[in-house]
Image 1 (cartoon, rainbow, N blue to C red):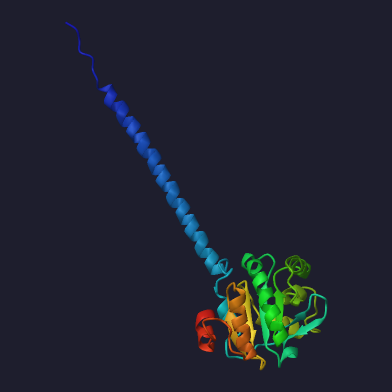
Image 2 (image 1 turned 45 degrees about the vertical axis):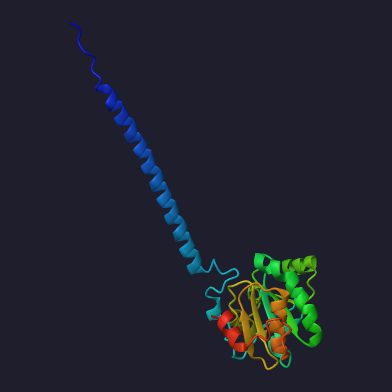
Length: 238
């Protein structure tokens, strides 16, 4: 009489395979969860440290001059080495564009700004391209490359690295007062030296012209009509 063959080993093999599969699935889930935690942590740190400020207000709006208040002195050099003082332009509407050739939104809007400036400059508006966080030679080279002809100034922080604070106190005050963290940043100042608008994002030519006409005291040619000071304060400086 033959002895029946036992089949008890087969279920054990299946159980071992299932266990290994579950183990791999758990590992995948754990790795995915850790990756998500790392991504979220990096995003949070970036927001806290201002890494998300390109083209967004971020903390920059709380550091800038307030709409409706006098613009503080801004002292630096033009790219050609001549002294620039914002106070010397009192009596003229001024558009300060804080930018850098390293900034993608700044590069993207440059042709639009040039087009707007070509329309506004003959009407008496002064536009200054205040380059920041780079060697001024890089700023000038990029401006020439894309055909931007408005005046370029040097980052005050670039100059404070080599200047004597006792000889140029206003330069160091400028670096502390105008703490720009968002790029691009546009500040529109009327002929009385009062800040009338702060725009913390990329602009097209039509929008830039509308802001320029506002500080020129002229009716806006924008199809939607004149931009009110209230709208500028609520939309662009929060």
